[in-house]
Structures are given as structure tokens and as C-alpha cells.
Amino acid sequence: MNATILGVPYYVWGSGFLVLAVVWIFDRPLDRAAAPKTLRFVVLRWFHVLVWILLGIASLVAGSGVLGGPPASRAVALLSLILYLAFVFTLLTSPRKS
Image (cartoon, rainbow, N blue to C red; front, top):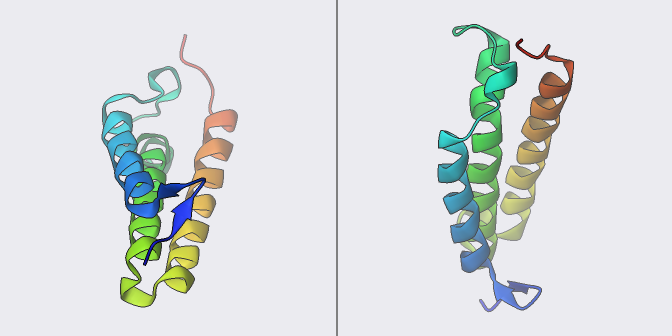
């Protein structure tokens, strides 16, 4: 399969998304971090990372055609959108630390 987005193959996009996931593991919104072991902490700490991992998986699945190909990748991408919206909502409603 020779699928591309903007002329760039899906596997390149997927690899880039996975690299971004690694970056977001080490960079997080510390000024809004909640106490550990709370749902707010988990959302702020890991949902953004999971969004990039899921986008990477969706791109790789869409490009390779395995595991259902594009229909499966759309479902994974939709899940990443839901996680991202939860992350943004939590980030915007979390109080800043002084």
C-alpha cells in the first residue's frame, strides 16, 4: 500500500507521532499537576502521551493495512480525540499551583 498524507507515507507520520509520545513522557504540565493517585493526575500526566501513541498506532495501521486497515485506524484515531478532549478539559479546569 502506498498511502500518504500530504505526500508523506503513513509510517513516517506514525514514527513521528511515537517520537512525540516519548517527548511528552518527559514534558508535562507541572504547574497544574494534582496530587498523585488521583484521576486528575492520571489524566494530566498520561492522556496526552496516550493521544500521541494512539495516533502513531492509527497511522501505522492505516499505512500497513493490518488489523483492519483504515477502518480500524479511524476508530483508534477517534479514541485519541476523546482522550485529547478529556486532557484539555482537565487542563483548563485544573487550578494552577502557586
